[in-house]
Length: 266
Image 1 (cartoon, one colour):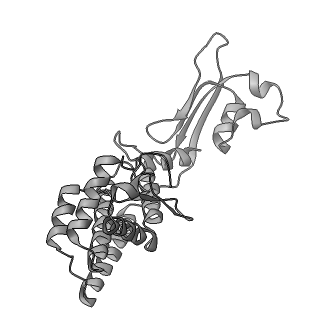
Image 2 (cartoon, helix red, strand yellow; image 1 turned 45 degrees about the vertical axis):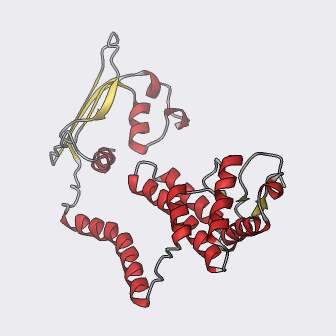
Image 3 (cartoon, helix red, strand yellow; image 1 turned 135 degrees about the horizontal axis):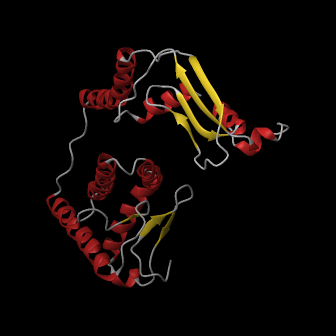
């Protein structure tokens, strides 16, 4: 029992417990209370909190995908529908069950956590209509189950198939070397400092040190380079390196293409 004015519900993911608010016994009849308990036992039996917690993690990873959020709403609808059908299937009076849900809604707050399975979740109006008319979902046949499994496998396989086909159609990345490299000391008054690839795949450095060049080539921070002569960090140069194979990088190139472009320059 809890003193918090929250609806009866199953809380916890791995060691779930059923919390009932104080005063619930005085608000419901015996039949209504048994219906509420049967509903929550259904949530416990099928580990609905664990399923909801897993999907919440998926939502956190793929927050940008609207289909993930739609699936989350549908999961809540279906888990409540299943529990409602299970309660009615045991012979519970539909009117008493519907009244118990309405009474809980009037007196207690719904759970704020999506992975805490309560009794008032999903579309209340539609649930009450379904309970009173006892419209149960049709059970899946073997053919339906195989079709559903096939659809799930296809949904998982499509991205891999597209990726494999795309990888076969993309041209191999060019392998080149710097054909010409121009290195000259920079002017002591020059304050510029730029280092990076050119649009044609070469390298251009303005007023850069040898330490900066080493850091770029090996992908490390300059402070990780030790035991180098002092001039490597003080003397500055202008460097222009031209590749033997020119490579144009389109302005709207994908991130992976830009990264591969930079890696080849390194």
